[in-house]
Image 1 (cartoon, rainbow, N blue to C red):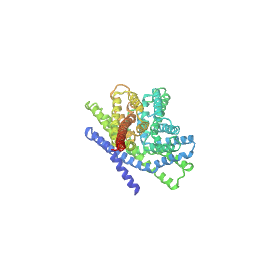
Image 2 (cartoon, rainbow, N blue to C red):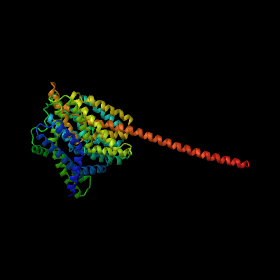
Image 3 (cartoon, rainbow, N blue to C red):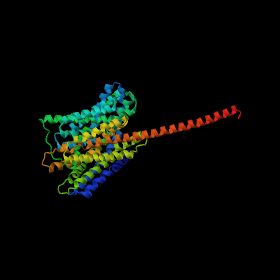
Image 4 (tube, rainbow, N blue to C red):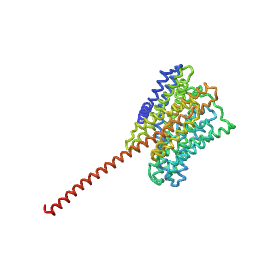
Length: 536
């Protein structure tokens, strides 16, 4: 009964958090551009219900199984003592926990629909491997106490130096993969590792050192997908494999999609469990009853992820593609393109406010700033910033410009702001960039932008790559918080300086009053003594 009540409670919370997104979808698909085929509403309803319930069931199982695995492994790795062994095992587990990330799975599926040569499992494993090696590097930074600002500057200098050698079609995809790899499963595990290492092997022995570990983890997938795209390019004789029209359903029925996901979800999830069992035998000593309880908790994770991905394939991806296409339909007035920009802005805001990680980030920043920056201010700032990020993504698609014309200046601004921002806020900014592009973003906004790119490709005589032009939305959403959080950090520092200066001035004033009072008393005593000596 406890399990059922927990599932009901989580479903309610997931439903309430998704209401802003549901309201915008309803506004568009019911009032502005209704479906011509009534079956579209059935697909949307089934898709939305599956996404909400599947995500709720997934999160319930996550709390009972995957997260405890991450915490147990993260806190127990320090028993290995040797730093190279800790880093090696953390790379393996960093890879395995990322494989099960829903957002990464969704991104791989969407990419495969456009370019069949992109194997979903290969894509997911390579991006996860990039995450694993980044986790190892992040822990090494903690042990060596390297300056976080210099590390970020170096990593992104390498990224933008290599980007000129990568096929354009894989640039946006690589940055999207970076945002998709850091989600509900990998983030708690990586943070648990970071806290354990920071408290035992870091020179400063402070858990504050864990800020920035997610930001570093986000760089590895960019580089690994760069390599994947380059290898595909050369294996195909110096050209990329052919693309095809973007069709999320591709003629599959609801049951067909469900059956097709059975093995894929198992391959994504069970490596974590299989690696955890020998870890329990040789590293961690936990009771058998606890181990059985954790393994039992994997069942709702599997079922929830299965329902979630099927709902995306059947309804969410369909609705996102429909909204992306309908506003660019030549039969509609030209001003519909401007309405599309407004809709994308609202969708960016709604999905940001729906992401649980953004709420956690707001609470964390409010606590760190002692309430000087309210969590609602943080969430609102991020929501507006990501709304504009969604608009920029659509402008990029409509203009068919290279994504680097947008990402280059944005990352440059983020790097320049590091000079004026405290180390803690720099680390938090890059962490927030890693957690804002969650499952809902991949589930809805990626099909939306791919639908827009599909229409742009159809109405132009040029040979436009849908993969190149349509992807990048998660990249935009991941870079915006780097700027927003650092600006908030600068504002906080200015406020703190003003408060400190006012406090110092008040203290100085009190001291002057004290000295003046004491001087007055001393003067009166001196005069009294003189009067007594003079016989007055």
